[in-house]
Amino acid sequence: MQSADFVATLFDGKSNPAKVTVAFTMALNAQQKGHGAMVLLMVEAVELGLPGATDGIDVGKPFEPVSDLLAKFRDGGGRIGICKSCMIHNGFSAEQMVPGYEIVTAPEVIDLMMAAKGSLQIT
Image (cartoon, rainbow, N blue to C red; front, side):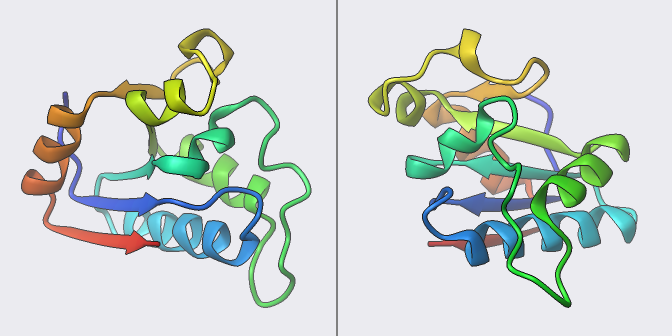
């Protein structure tokens, strides 16, 4: 598992669009400042790993719609991690997730967090 300078860990999914927006806003900003960044989807947030899952998430100005934030983040090399145990617990499979998103195990989550220079936990 490749480390990341900045890891934003997100626990909420579509039910809390403000938290989703903040996670992607901060990860994009970390990336724009030159840091390697990952958004790590845990618990209910794993639903955001499905294709098109961020479509329509828009809390309004001054924030950008999450789909736009995600596109910019991914275009700049940003990574999305999906907690494997959380994914399975929520009834999803790796095959359902966006290709290129990284399925990570609990030990890999620990490695990511310990190697990060900074992190943001959005619970």
